[in-house]
Length: 486
Image (tube, rainbow, N blue to C red):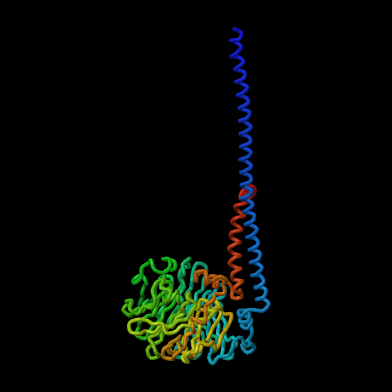
């Protein structure tokens, strides 16, 4: 009986001991596993942080090096001086005391500039000295000589005032430096483009206007302030074409009133030059280019019509995103390319006028050059350091009206096979044209190709550096903000 009573008690004690040992081992195992997991998580976190720290260090180094390159080029530009510096210094002294800035030419040259940070109207006289300078408006666009005058030009610009935009057409007599306002129109200032890029005088009181904001062209009588005619691009184009609607759908940047009453209009974002008949109908058979057909035109500026008596009908146009000047001749029922010019420096040209002697006057915005090209393709005159929007040579007529077509004057094209276009931006051949030209437009002219690349790298690495720093130290930043708010 004792044995019977003792056995269960003995087995229970052994079972309890075994259970305790199991629990103890399990506890140790769990603790070890927890420590392993914690160690793993700690190491994992440290590895992630280590990678972040490495990334932060690399981005910081890129930012510092990029800033160093840009700073060095800025210091060099300050020491050597830019064309803008020389022009503005010259504008501060009497005309008779000004020194020659550019090569002399037989007639004055008028330039409107429009690039990030520099908007002005500039006139160089026949001796190459600055004759006139004005930067009182916030934007300057189209410039035209006034008919039956030898020294008067008309230009269109914009002046910003609080929540308003004043669209202004003015005349300048460069022999007296007197300015008179011909027409003024005020609109509410919004985030949309709201400038008139072109005003083409029809007669004493009427202008044809290219209106970017409303995607239209219209004829305004400045005496009565009545719009006598208006054509809106929505009557002929689908909203899916071009740019984003309504912000910048067509970007109508040029209008030319032809002698038969037809309006030639540049729809930049539809890559097209169109002809609007006096009855308001689009003559589709005469349209040059089409949306996204970049081999013909790519976001062009300032097309000029060459009439039949000068060897036309022909159109010479600054094919901006294609970095070239191109001419198309009307042959039968279609347009045929008959001339092309570009060089290794050309970057986003925005104007080209055919002069009566067969030369072509070119405004190449992002390279900062104004060029005069002879019929054999050689550059016979140039200005460096001016980001032009429009260029005019007084005494040669309005734009290309008195200039011959390339076909009539046997003007030679620049051979594409021996002139490969190269942007200043390093690696530009691997990037979209619109990105390359946008970078060149918003950076100053004194930046070289290396400097432009450094500015892009600096901006990109700086943004990533800020983002990574906030992510890495978000807890400390949160605590600091909490303490500050208490």
